[in-house]
Image 1 (cartoon, rainbow, N blue to C red):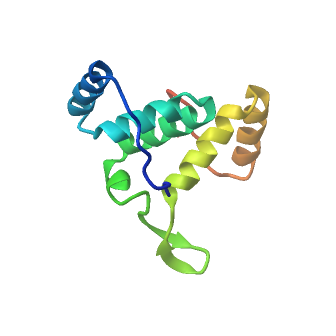
Image 2: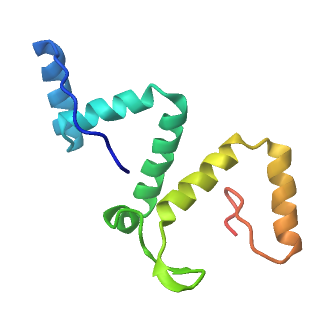
Image 3: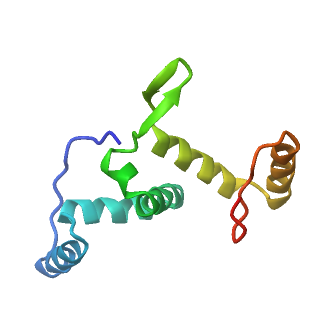
Length: 122
């Protein structure tokens, strides 16, 4: 993710101490905690970052490589931004009505591809 240059923010000593304690508990910098809180105030960004966190939890190797596992591109072996692809697809699914999701699943199964259903696996 590309970020802008840093900005300076003045905090009361009490708030700064609270943020430092939270950052230490989470193994992050105070700046990262503040950035995450600001992003969480936007529902869309919060949903997307939540999905990124879920993916990082499920596949730590993906997170360590910045979302770029070895993949197979259209023109042959290539580095693919799998994290971006998965987050986009998962976010679109969250925005989709249930009946649309069922229709899409049925169409995928019709062409013989496996589908995933929570609690049932493939």
